[in-house]
Amino acid sequence: MSVLPFDQRDGFIWFDGDFVAWKDAKLHVLSHGLHYASCVFEGERAYGGRIFKSREHSERFRASAELLDFSIPYSAADLDAIKAEVVARNNFSNCYVRPVAWRGSEMMAVAAQHAKIHVAIAAWDWPSMFDIATKMRGIKLDVAEYRRPDPATAPCRSKAAGLYMICTISKHRAERRGYADAMMLDWRGRVAECTGANIFFVSGGALHTPIADCFLDGITRRTVIDLARRRGIEVVERRIMPEELEGFEECFICGTGAEVTPVAEIGPYRFLPGALSRAMIDDYAAEVQPQQKAA
Ligand code: PMP
Image 1 (cartoon, rainbow, N blue to C red):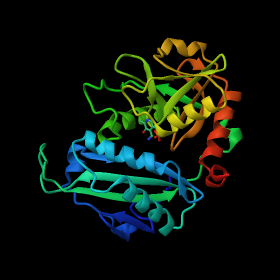
Image 2: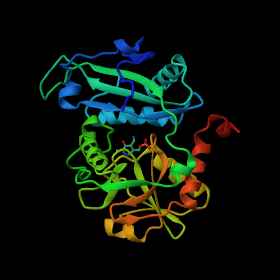
Image 3: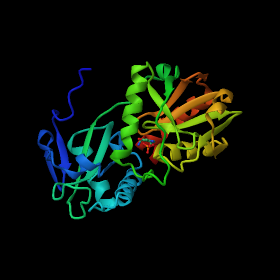
């Protein structure tokens, strides 16, 4: 793929309090965040120059760090203002926004109590991936070998870099086998989520989704639940076993990056992207637009 590498672009990145030229936003190889995964991040989107649910993302960013035993030295209000400036300074309208925080180089062992906390915020152009006709064909999901860990094993509510190790491995394996992504089960063998998105199923006019008790309770997931209920659609959060997939009519995944993306197959199971997936795509698209929200 001939994508311009992310360290060789033009523009500005906010880095520890200042805007720096994109190519100068560097860190040292001896950084605790790199070696020991003491790193948390966010993934957000701006539509028409406005970041959707910026405050919720800022709060989750701060909460993710607290779960890894460090504090982000900026308030949620500060982060909101900086993110808006990152989007504006780079002249982006529809873009992805990536705040990241990590422990620095003062200590290079498991313990790093006194390592400095660094924060950077970058943004890049990222329009929605598919036109609606392509989207409605649905993507194909593999079933990942790795499972979402037990909350007693990992800080699973944190959007922590370390938790993505099994996601990258699972997504690579799925792509090599011709799938777009992989659905992950949890440590108990229940349906959990995908490698970077939550999952919903349709049965008898209602939405069914796993309880987010050991994986990220996505901001898009919560938005979709809210939008569905506003339409009078029943939403059931419950334990879903993989064998039940046979009985569901539709399936879609959702996340800041994926937005609402219908699924046509998961391993041996088939779904027909239909009216409810389409309604959620349309409602989500309308919800994220700043003009329509203000109306
Ligand atoms: N699960 C995982 C593992 C993710 O990486 C994401 C994307 N942040 C999500 C779910 C969806 O979260 P959100 O809707 O907040 O983007």
